[in-house]
Image: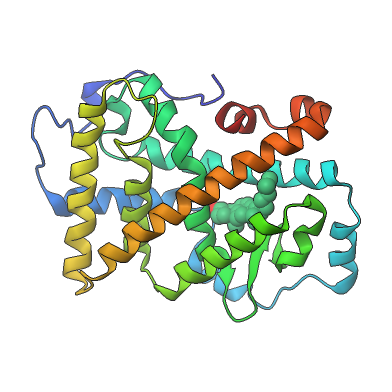
Length: 264
Ligand code: CLR
């Protein structure tokens, strides 16, 4: 499997074994998820903040726009796969994830990893000029023109913009993305009950920090965003099918194996 490093569950490694203790300490659980988020989030928000002025020049934008459809798809698939790899690492560090069967870990990642990348995108997004940090500089939607899926790009940019409006803290993003991953309603799960128990703990964690931050009202909004995420990811898969039909060779031999395993 490409999702290397997904080992069978070793209870000795898992201090949160939900068999031993339903939920020992909610603060500890939240702290652990926040730490995992920080360690797997690629760039710190302050670093990104400092890079805000770095925009692509007109020439650079033109260079992206004159790439062929398959060149640009391959380029984006590589970037996305890199981001997904960090999400896989994040998932593995969510207390309880590793005690799920390998089948269920993969099933959760197949549907959830892209959703988490899109939530994480809001950290890389500048709402002042609607640009995202991509390839070392901030890029507007026009940079992705040669992908020939303007509707998906527009929807993804809108979503990032709306997420930014919530002004989530890093702690809230950490718990929210953990909940996006650990979802007992995903298709193809073997042991839904087990996923449900982990999900309940993460839910408790998210409710706990929102309450602590005096933002209980955010919970409802976050559940609404989850529905939007599902539709965006459906659109991503649709576009990928369209692309693979038109450019079977690129999709088959030039896309990263992990991208193919998760989305194809
Ligand atoms: C998300 C947060 C990650 C870093 C990161 C890497 C790649 C970026 C991604 C972020 C956001 C979405 C992104 C992607 C590369 C291409 C993709 C800009 C910032 C756009 C939306 C194009 C999608 C194309 C598919 C149809 C292949 O930590």
